[in-house]
Length: 272
Image (cartoon, rainbow, N blue to C red):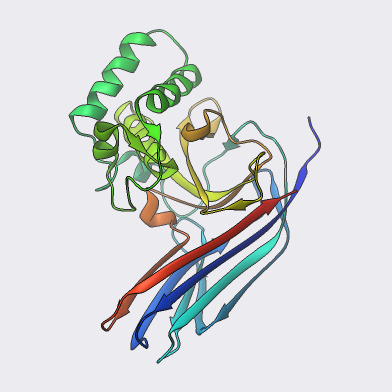
């Protein structure tokens, strides 16, 4: 086995408002947990322009924080950073744990509900991979999705469904994960969404965190698939949150009352 990699991560999210905020609440899932081949050596999260109200583990055992934006604020900065040591387990997570039962990950959600395109994708896989073992089928499914949905930023958003992204033929890592989750469930496999970080080989600065999926197999338990990069996660990947789809594992989600627009800026560095 190769030696673990130690990754330093700094993730800064800034919301700027063109009018003072009356009321806003942010839900954060930005703190990774130790386990499944990763060890969190140190981690801190600081808020400027807001106050932490609660911290808890949600139904998927994601570390979750609620932050209230200070009344009258025009800017809030959320800084999450630390060091994580990661082993290369070839994407194998193994045993199912947590409060959510395995069968929950078999059910479609609004963003992962299969339509004609995803059903056709599943039929194509069955026809081409008849007789292949489960792992080979899932790797083939990942490759099929990438061949049919090119990676393009700015063409989809957090509400884009798996069906519409597959039909359009373009999307980002979130869309790739949603499509694979929808197809895997259609094929009878529990599947879940993963948000986290990826150390890229060609850059330190990134525009956003990463996303991939995990599929349950009888032989190995949970196994990860990063469709966008055509591999199972290795020691460059840090898992932060999981869920049925993006909404369950989103790094930051919030509600805001009052008029005016907000501007989002993300600064992310992942390096060895």
